[in-house]
Length: 512
Image (tube, rainbow, N blue to C red; front, side):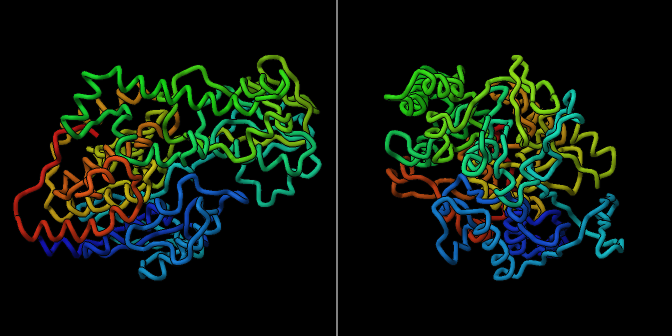
């Protein structure tokens, strides 16, 4: 092991959970790490989340693998609980997180990166050997299409970022536009306060119910069996590749069956209800197979959403937005919905990197669905730079940690990367697969979404650590849901393996 490399200074931009997880892992590898955060509080999106937001993951899957929750949170932790956890993690792990330090420019040079940051109105520069961008998918500008007549509308047009208190809905005829987690949450919250709630969406997507056939959904999607059945751009074992190439009918049959189950779970809320109730429920059902919609934007139904939809407390509209009149929002199907408040929950724009030199921004921002990174961590043509948390997926924190250990192995000179041309070819293949098999979203290229098991397996194989975290219990390995602590001690295992061998590591020959 090259101990000189351990003295490298690394700048991390962003103190969300990915930045914190990455800083912790790199610190354990002996690097000097500084985290820059432009806000007055750490935590990224969790520092500014809308009221009463809860995580879709369960608490056992969302924490640093070696720093469990000091106090047991809700089964699906609240934004307040997550923010408190992250603040405590920074303190207990003694991470160097510098608040109100906005990075305004990164300039590459022979030594690495000159980081220019602004604090208390003063601009300062520091030299670092390596930089990691951890600004996340959900901190960019909100998608706000320009609509005719908007300036004439007498009501208010906001996004969820403007909601600091749910009293904003009091006595308002409210329209919520969008179909992701945020839109479903805000629509449901509004019903407790507004006089009317209309939910408008251009296209419905499959949404996960918390219970599927009596089981919590994580028992289906967070075990190895469920993820092996997931179609992916990468299958790390010969058995998985055989399944998806030669036994494709079994895979598609599995997803056809799950699609039918999901459809049944929506329709059952109309049992014994009026024809109008059944039509409202039918409005939110997609026509496509479930597998096409499973991605980063996959949402969990709020508990009250479907009952309120059936009851008529929520009125759905399957139509695009067209424009405004003084008193209403007009939809593309000609419907005019009188309202006082419109909440646009149309997602975030594809990430922008305004602090990077223009030639690197051109590489990273040219695609509408983001840039495909090699191993979802680095760009082949941008030296001494990596990304943390852009490999977003259903097991987000372990993915950030394992990604950080992969980066550490690279920085230590123990993981030899392919040529830039070979990495670009790999990125191209993954990007094309996603375009052919996944619906569009602004972070489609960056994210790994439900392919987290394949992704984690490949990265762990790259660095010589076993991906099978529940062995020798084969039943648990296949059918038990994975949790964050299954990836505890990855760094320690890596260091132990490297002490036993000096053999150069090279990435396994699988694209991801």
